[in-house]
Length: 220
Image (tube, rainbow, N blue to C red; front, side, top):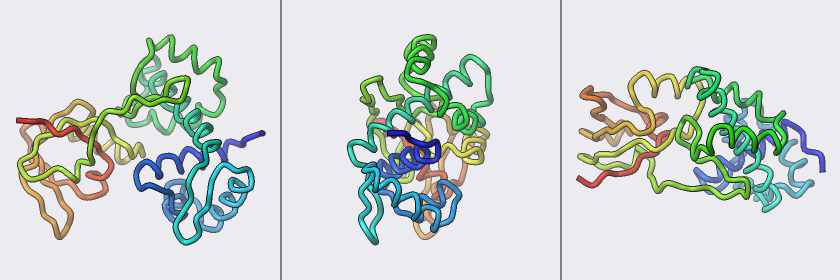
């Protein structure tokens, strides 16, 4: 069955939202894809008719096994494209995601596999997110959201799940990149603010950034 570029984008976005929230709300899809709710509703009907998703009214949508297969393939092409762009073409780390979005849809499985081989089988994209294997498997690294660290906890950054340019640029500018170590020195619950020490500098982070970064808690 033919799948359009737009349909691939939707399935990839649904997959990401499912991993984060358990299902994909239409409002979250509209925000992620920068489209109207009406546009999302029309595409949801198309994807449901093609049996890529199941729509639970007043809740959200979930991928079927058929939808997962397509989404994983798109994610694989995307994350290998990011590695190609940063590792070989020296594309800016903050711009790699947006550029890969343009590149991913034109790659065949044959070329995707060649890219993986040329890059010596990388495990993650430049932002730390796991690259699916050819069989669809993911090598997950146990981690939690940065926002879930407690006062006094030390963590090492595993990945950045929101790869929009502004998030990536801010993260890079203050040193919040995969492998970086930080410590929580205060939490302000009524504003959901996290105050951390990163590279000897104190930073105050809001919920947008702390929910977009996953860390592995270090035992000290």
